[in-house]
Image (cartoon, rainbow, N blue to C red; front, side, top):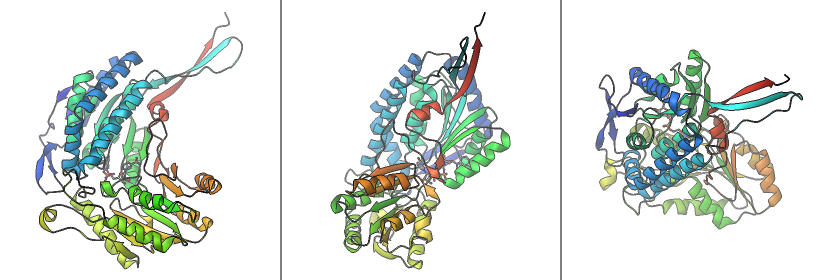
Length: 476
Ligand code: NAD
């Protein structure tokens, strides 16, 4: 771990095994932090904060730019660490490095842009606001894009004078450990700390630490709610949450069919084995197009190449761990039991080298009942549910019928329908004739049970500051 600028094992010497989900091999061990380690990291962050918060924004910017450059230089190694521990194909994980580097540069550039404002009051009074850092910020991140989250989520807090503790997923900590080592080369000791360990111990201790007043969490919806509850038991913290989704892609009858079929498959993120919060896991197709559309999507899904994640040709890799694999397979059985029609995949790969790993073929169910569990619950695996609808109103109603509200997409050439959908759909991020794209500077985040707060834009930066109002009387 990186704590206070040093490489540390856990105080009690405990470790966690890291496995390669594509081969079953044990890759190594990482420290399993306990509350004692979290306390050390918080103390280190508090000590570093005293100087870091006083630095000029130019220093925050320069250090972040230098950090981004180091990550870029080590990009191939970092991508390979992610491939080994999370099973996604190498060509996808390289994109994650690029995203992280761009994100760090984006926040570096904004370091001097988070100012307060002056507020008109009376003639001889000056009223203004300051935006000031919280202090030590905890950021807990998931397994699906390990390096991307561990690295990019350092940018916003640090660019406005906070210090940060990153807690990666226990399954995919390797790239975060390396990120900690790189951070030591550019940041003063204690500005960036990386702790590894289990969510229920290390993560929970971070959430409950009284000196951490700002927590940002990316992960499952249930964990998110638990974190809010646990944090509130200790003191009042500002908590933001980026949670799951069961996102609808709605294909209206006038859509460009070829691009919609392509988008339906790409939007499901089979390339990360469906393990993405933004996956369009509900495909809602107008009945006029439905039979041909289902056939085209199924055949396109069947054509996706499963293989070793380190192989450059591989298009879909391994599921991250046994628990996640069991969950995916149980939902496939559930889909069959609920009467959905399996039109692609649905099986685990067991022949040859595949047998050592956790591989499931891209799976497509058609005729899924909108109210069934298959259509309502986040699987976080390579399982796409296709649902027909007859009218725009019905499509919209189905789109909005889940507890989540992260992303949504509509394919149509009708400008009016596109804008009505964008207005009426219950989601935090909407694509029109597009899927999956994240653009730096645009706010990403969920409605309903998909989260609280926004990230990837300037509001994320602002969310790591607290506002102070200053009222000055200059009458005499
Ligand atoms: P998870 O909730 O199991 O774990 C996420 C992180 O939280 C890990 O670091 C874990 O160790 C930690 N954690 C677990 N229990 C904790 C606790 N009690 N207290 C504190 N920390 C705890 O999620 P996961 O399985 O790693 O990731 C998958 C989930 O993440 C999916 O639901 C997915 O939709 C969501 N996700 C959301 C976004 C987004 O931007 N909205 C992005 C990626 C993933």
